[in-house]
Length: 348
Image (cartoon, rainbow, N blue to C red):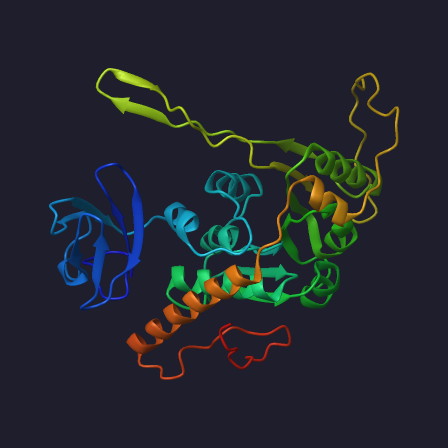
């Protein structure tokens, strides 16, 4: 339930007088401590949303349930997340609708997965494919924490899209496909096989090099419409009396979005008639290794210590949720790549 009075187990976002948010899970008898006093969780349990509670030091905190955008920015993460501004663009521009059959590759920490599941609803389906099992485990924990348990429309697979998608989806039955990976052009053949005519393929890339390579490879394949690409920049504003001005900081470039649609089988898209820019095709598109690209875009390896810490916190949250629901086994656990529940690993 995401309405009504606060209950034990609810996630609550506390905002201090300086606008700094803190997210916590309500537990009977627990305390929230700051350097300016504390208060008990019991002061919020049973209180209506929008309550203000004070610490023993007299500091007021506004208590509200976190929005989806708040949850994405505060949830445990292994890989970097797709920011809310881009997730909103993906849901709209890829036309993710209730009942749609959607697949995504490159789940990471599950930020985009939350938006996609909300969009397809219980009547749709979302297949999420992640190469790394540890990232998949983190994404599963974040999704189950946000929705209060497993989502009926969600299926999570560990593996490579080019191997998983042909076995998981019947040819020509997928409505939408979202790719968040270093080399999305490598998946064009699998995407063309899975998507229905008119289906939307959307790729999220970080650099112009990736953007150009994906667009040109899609054109060369001949079964896609003319790719369309853009980025979004979000600037917040300072509002105080007559002092209305842009904030000093903004969420600027995070990535490029590029979309194209599947043509009917055997049909080639008409060539867009336009005058090419000078030098547009003077050199062939560079070929490069994915590992080199990862270094060029500044992709950092997530430490094993951080992964273990995130997984432990999610397992503790899963056990608390299971205890509230009367499940002594602590929930379904995290599925391994073969679909079985692995034994718990010892903390390092």
